[in-house]
Image (cartoon, rainbow, N blue to C red):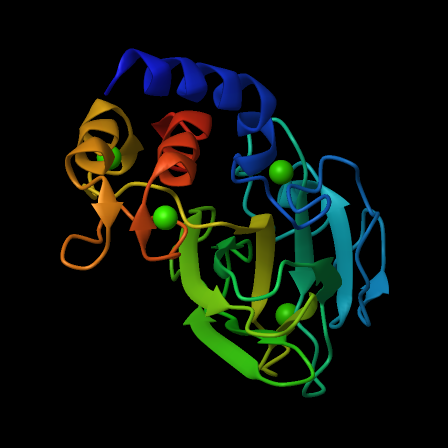
Length: 246
Ligand SMILES: [Ca+2]
Ligand SMILES: [Ca+2]
Ligand SMILES: [Ca+2]
Ligand SMILES: [Ca+2]
């Protein structure tokens, strides 16, 4: 890299990098703001998850049900999660949010799921739908068999012409005696700029972008923003997201 280019990188890093960091577009996806910023057609029932079709935003499911497993949230172990007693009617959204997105952009959607019922663990059958006027993508996942364990599931999503997306979570396990689950750290963000695929944004990715500098193809792993040029924006994306992938 020439000295002029190095100086340009430093200037752009200061001015632009904060705007290209892969922020979470889901508001209060970690539930640390409490019962806010999302819609639910379950009934909000603080401190009492005995009825099907109810939910609470709480720190420990043991506080809201006699068979609730005692464990902490995913974010910090000390924060809040959404815990629900699964509905017995189909298609009832437990969590829903409309998220503003950029058109023609790739995103990764991720959600952490656990099972809180310690007595009859037939896990919830969760369906996540990301929908726009043009398209709909569905992710189906069973909640963990073992109560109190957090598992993450992710799906890639492309916005096409959309500038907003509606994300909806439902539970298709309608068996009242079980189907009880918790959600935390719901996120929709730009893919982690990790072209060497080691799970960490670091010097290897920085070197890879520099090594592929210029037109793509032939070498395109370093083209993080997908504009068919390995260049300054790709380098900035690496620098702005330096550290472990979320
Ligand atoms: Ca949390
Ligand atoms: Ca239940
Ligand atoms: Ca990497
Ligand atoms: Ca590029």
